[in-house]
Amino acid sequence: MPNIAFLGAGRMASAIVDGLLAQKICAPSELACTDGGHGTALALAARTGITAASDLAALLATADTVVLACKPQQLATLDPRVTDLAAGRLVLSILAGKRLARLAQVFPRARNVVRAMPNTPGQIGAGITAWCPLQPLAPADRALIDAILGALGQVVEVAEPQLDAVTGLSGSGPAYVFEFAAALRDAGEAAGLPRATAWQLARETVLGAAKLMAQSPLEPEELRNQVTSPNGTTFAGLQRMAARDFRGLVKETVLAATARSEELSRD
Ligand SMILES: NC(=O)c1ccc[n+]([C@@H]2O[C@H](COP(=O)([O-])OP(=O)(O)OC[C@H]3O[C@@H](n4cnc5c(N)ncnc54)[C@H](OP(=O)(O)O)[C@@H]3O)[C@@H](O)[C@H]2O)c1
Picture (spheres, rainbow, N blue to C red):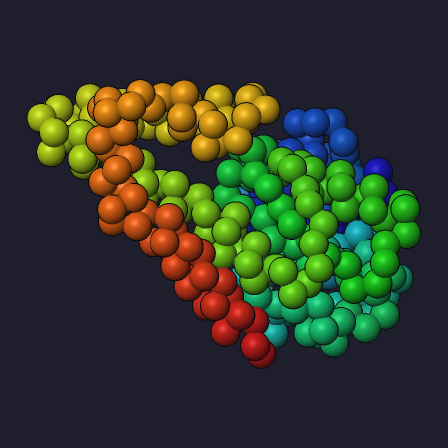
């Protein structure tokens, strides 16, 4: 792998570094990072053996690819030398809501720019990341993007206008699942279970159902039907979900997050 420089050394950069090292895609000597001055780069370097660069010029001198992993609002605070220093490099941004046109203003002479939307299960290699390029990617750059984002889990290429919907679905989606698990726990408690038991049952049910879904070729509706006997217990529960338009609520949820992503991307 060519050398990769991370601008930002927080949770997402750490997850990518961890994945690249764990899967032996990169050696620590091929990775370097910098931060905004609060010691996160040194901490990541100490934990993983990669380099914490104190100077942007030194960081980018040997880098072929630059991963932009600071907070979106920190894009404006980047060292302005980055524009020249990133010339000829492949730039991969994971900043939420920063469109390719805006990134191209900061990196006008980059070899290419890719915008990606990962999600938090990427921290354990179980994420899914959607991405889109500014210009069609050269095969070698596509392989680089697949390897870097693959460190977080699955990858899918989309057109840039779809990234707001991606944000509304898989970007925010883990929070919906956590909220569902918490609701299931509270409901179990309301049904008479001790809270700890209700949590264990709720968590393992979400996890087990997710694993079954991942391993089965069946549509979720078919898996649902396998649990549902006519007039049985699951049938009674599902009827209540339908009566309260559960699917309509989930649709509203994703559309609200998508609309908010569109709003936040308008700068
Ligand atoms: N977490 C998620 O689920 C998720 C999902 C999708 C997308 N994203 C995107 O991933 C990005 C990173 O998120 P995160 O959760 O990893 O954030 P984070 O943990 O807060 O890390 C941000 C990193 O950026 C560094 N930084 C700040 N200013 C900088 C500058 N001027 N130059 C270089 N580095 C700078 C920070 O360094 P110091 O703190 O040491 O100053 C820190 O290492 C965000 O843009 C977010 O939109 C996150």
